[in-house]
Length: 209
Image (cartoon, rainbow, N blue to C red; front, side, top):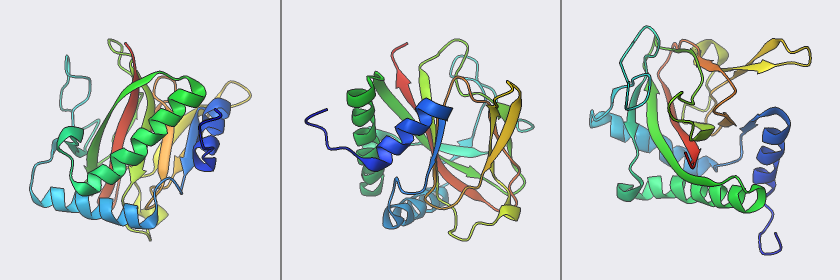
């Protein structure tokens, strides 16, 4: 690591992942970067390019609104806007840091904008597929209003094992600029019903199959 500048934010995330398999960071992106990305998702939504999200992967995907109600728009890194370039520049720097310090073998990433309209939710699930285990780390970056309140809903609930090998729930409020990152294969999670439109960028860091 002699040629790597230690990044305290990344190091905190790594420590959290090693110790508890999830991390919540409010400092990964700056306030200005968060504002620009929020404007970007709202602008993209006006173009009506979003589509109803499905469950399953490309081999067996299906739309089931009783399970998942968000609408999404995949972000193509080869066609990204200047604002999206800010996002991927930091994500790719983080991936390089993980690979060089933790030897994680992250080979690719995939991200999409996600909008949960009022009244929608996403039932409990895990992000890794039975026929494709490349998803290693899940990332959700929130682009909501800065004054997002608990009664607005939309909390990310992580279902975590406790010291008695039972299960506890951790509710993560989707505050503007907050990043939730967790193990894709082992942590079940859900999105509680939203009472106000909820904006985020969601994605996965993936290893070799």
